[in-house]
Image (tube, rainbow, N blue to C red; front, side, top):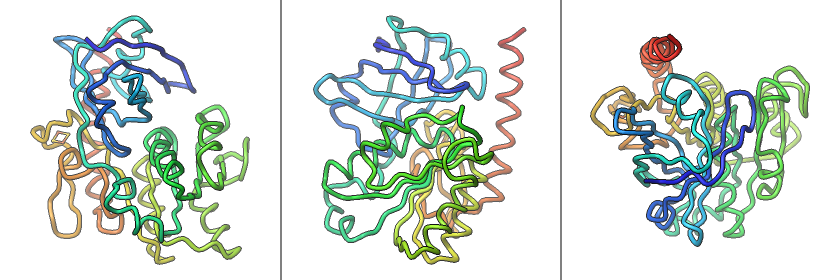
Length: 281
Ligand code: FES
């Protein structure tokens, strides 16, 4: 069993848990994910690793309640435990590999996170800081009440820009508007990592393609069971079919077929919605 050491509500429907999982904590790298299972009958829930402490043997996960399984998970409290907590799974972020360190040092990196996408970006920025590599971070959310990890991110980012769609905190506008504003004032980036809702990643990619910034995206939002078997996370990248959970979750955002990916996400959202209704009955 994998004990929950702490639980906090970070924003509306967004929760953080610190879980004792020494073997995962020993090996994981930024960009990877775990699969959690509440009990024998529970669904497998793939969740990105948000932080890890190798000495304490803990993993931090942040999740948003988007369906029946994550809603059920949000009822768990510190002291309770997951039956399964499998990982680390997926490929680590290309920026956070020791063998790429020299190449990474040459890049001017900007991260753009939207909503709960802040969680998988945080460990990447932290890892870069620990290796002496500066990064600019643009954090966006619909409004001030949905923001989380602003202070955590301030500690690890070289420059942090926070924006809200309604202007209730920071820059009034979306992450793409903030990136364009930085570009217009002469900030030049050559590597972007965008993680957030599909529609946000799609529009970041549209802009970065115009600006000529290589862009990696994380296709976590499309995963269902994270096993490589359900097929729900199948996407088209260039002319190749890929599975987000085994071939990713990061991909070259300029090659992703966004329209097909969004249709696919809508299909299982409906199934999640049905499961949610069943939970409430
Ligand atoms: Fe099921 Fe990838 S999430 S195959």
